[in-house]
Image (tube, rainbow, N blue to C red):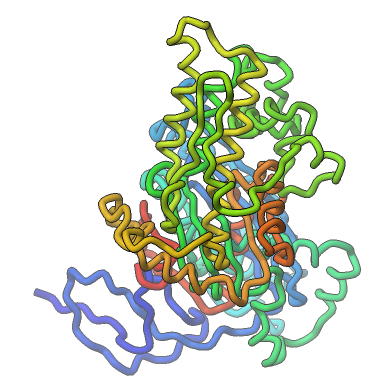
Length: 573
């Protein structure tokens, strides 16, 4: 049997992410045999190199959105988003994401999106006549950005797109997981092909890590606004000073550490982020995600005619928050946004990030629970149905939305089963309002626990609570380990990040801020991306790639998609 070899030190085992610059890699010193079945692919680490500019093309295909972005980072730390588009698979007939339909959509639309993205690459700097021409296209060279007038290096930095010289990306970023395996593979294989063709590094990143870092992308994009900022960045000479290199990841807001509520249709996580790759999961869903629950509730609560209303089937150019154009004329119905719009008519619901006119907040008419006892009080509608807050009998660090969804479904069916006919509009609004309220208060309750507000000591049985709900990808869900981590999580935190598709819900943002203020945590900054960056997008993948690349991370070309990739094991999977 042939013996294969790997470089033993220094190395990182994490999902084949490699620390170090591919262009300036030190020689191997320690070669040790390894088993052919070993999955370790480690290369030596080196200090990250200062770069004047970074340009990446990013791909996101973890679920039903086919997303491509082109992002540039300037020496000042400002970012420019040259391209950011997505195409959503048409799953309306299934009232949810159908895996085969989503994969077919990725396969059909990813290449055309990449082609459009290439046309948005920055124009290449003037090159010597011998560097390249439309008759002699060049796609290669993983060399340094500093060409020093060398025609060959300049040639390697140029892509010819529609007969025009464009700057070649420095690396390709792609979502590696978590997500649907076949969907992820479509994007990953395309990214590998581009990286090989262009002879540039590949970076596979964690989808949930990207959501957590999205506010830092927004911070960098804000820095990039205005011609003066861009001009001053371009005019800077030389590389970064040593102190600037060390401070690179403290330039952006929010600064580490911070707490994150990552809430979407596929995930519900409360996370403490210590650094770029160090994230501790404090609480997560035991079953379905909050976004999935809200969608299911919306489909049950909304009157049937609400879906057929022409005002909620906008043209591709429409900016309605309740639906989004897939880019090919297909409308993607956002059930959660429709429910918020239905419950709070005229409130501007779904506009994302909670940045609203103060007058609009009066529409919510919300009084936050002053203490835990108020928070877990059963809601009695007075119409024959009640709603019990999830996990009201425990302070375990976990989320449970499946049982609560069942309560809502029973409430909808109750009047019909009792022979009273279907709910009227006002009763549907009442149910929708309190279903969202209790779900969102449940989200915030575990954040309050992490900040030290448990309303009493943790029950001993919480340490072993829900152990039977664990699976191979999510350890310690709701157990004592998570609770112990949460007890010490909030001391030095100044910011709470809310990201993911559900973060675009204005009612959630209002409840979060109101509960924090009512429980003595009003000093915390609550930040959330704009609505367009809350849902899945490739811009957040690109930004995560840039931060990881600057820190010296690379991926090998043999990496595989990861259906489960816990955020707290980015360096260990």
